[in-house]
Image 1 (tube, helix red, strand yellow):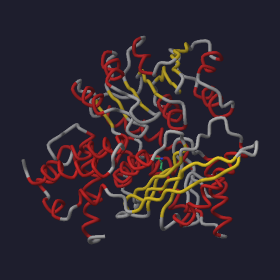
Image 2: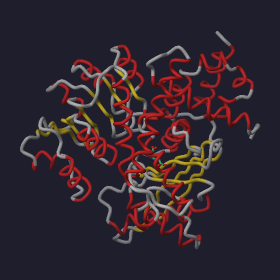
Image 3: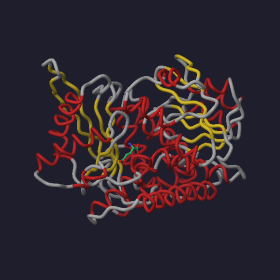
Image 4: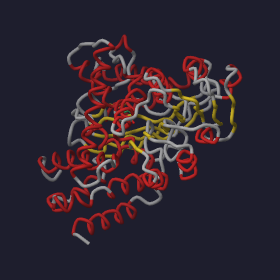
Length: 452
Ligand code: GLU
């Protein structure tokens, strides 16, 4: 065993020991560490500077009480988090997730991933993440607003355009960012546009930010397919989820000539051989705020498959591409088996860590192209960084210009992952390419900035 590999094992044990029960965080660290053996053999300076130990320990973790009153006058207490993970490359940057399952370990896994993802964008942003175990489902507009205001009444002291810049994630969209921004502005008495991203277009937001994560994932997929002389044109595609990332992934697949025949929510899936009508699905999810079963009721060509994930659609049709765009660990070994049996050629993660390690192994063994989230879904945060750029110069760019920047960024992330994988003897493995390229960039900056 090389000294680097020994250190990987030791630090991983420390991570488990110091962060008990945080299994998703362990999984995220393990996936990055698995990619680093050859890097540490080539660069012993990273071992000497204790980069592994330092990179796993967030710079700061903030946990706070979020009290709020519902429409009946009942007081609720939620827990708020902001994990400021790594600022080697720029201010902490990453979304807020509002979901009842959110624990500190969830935010830490997301923050850890974000550090490398943000590095891959090539833009000056560090990594952070936050959120709350608040469940927005079924809550009125007034309740959501009061919750957001209470969250920001604490969070404002920790954020700022040169400090930490939150954005959306699951359960946090433009509406929530609006309420958060309003409270930040009121408390600080500053119109500091760059303190949050994902804002509305008329008040400092960027065009393409809403579409960026889904669009970017599809661009990344197209680049992967091109390496094998294939493309999305004419491809049959499954997309899990029906939130913001999924909706815009579906839209872009259709623009590029593919057909998305399956989508889902936590209650079940729909199979629509004619292709998902994305306008109808958006209307159902974002305006009617209904379940995906309503889609099948309103669309003649669609069939509802209750209590099954979208991978079940692979029992009914051949599949060229699968895009998990819902949540972590949603594509497991069983799902991967269904997909490989249906002939899948590429899987790209629109969500963060949606594929389990066993499923990734299985897909790799079947020679399926696999785009990990920290590369494939980096278009969202990259466009957030473009929003910060527009805010800093008090400018606003056109849709076409911003989309072109997004396309260039995704192309460069793909090229960088491919080149890095090749350099380290794992050609075609985007997981190691992304992990190594992101790690080296952050590690070099950390070494340059001394032991802090
Ligand atoms: N939550 C998104 C992500 O996982 C976006 C973060 C941002 O725009 O800051 O990358």
